[in-house]
Image (tube, rainbow, N blue to C red; front, side, top):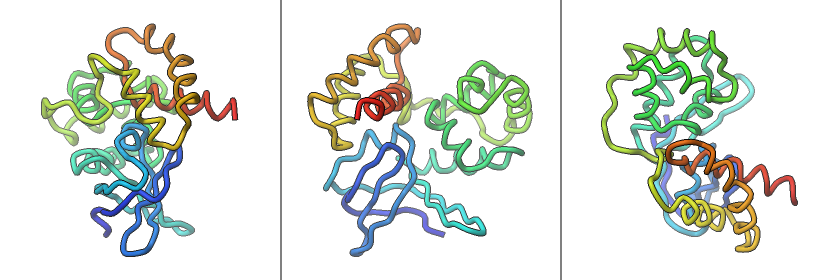
Length: 201
């Protein structure tokens, strides 16, 4: 199993990154929150989980070992594959997922695309004794109290967008951030911003 990849970031896309390892470009599927911390040409180290299928080998990358562990634990629940597990981590940080499961927060799980009310109830039952208690420290994708505009702008520049495009995307998602209630999650806003940019290109 490939436990991690380490090297300069060779390419960035809305859902993945390419890390150069020993002269080979390794494609890694990542959440928006993880991608927002990467910069073209800069060294990175991503914890990874290799998913083997009959017709494919897919490497998923994470900001740290905790996020990878939660990704793998989520897939022990029936009906949860790697894509849904990654979608859950794109919406919620590992600790937020632990908190949702320990408190039985059905609404938090239905916020994930692809999870309905019945699915959320089933997941809460299955994951209750698997994810454990929240660790307490905010992780990648956790709500930020200030500066979401700066963080989002920097993430878009890091993905290769021009300053003007990044400015427009930040302005486009501002209403969503303001109506989200509480503090906006940069990972979710980045996803919305990328959708806006893809429509305008």
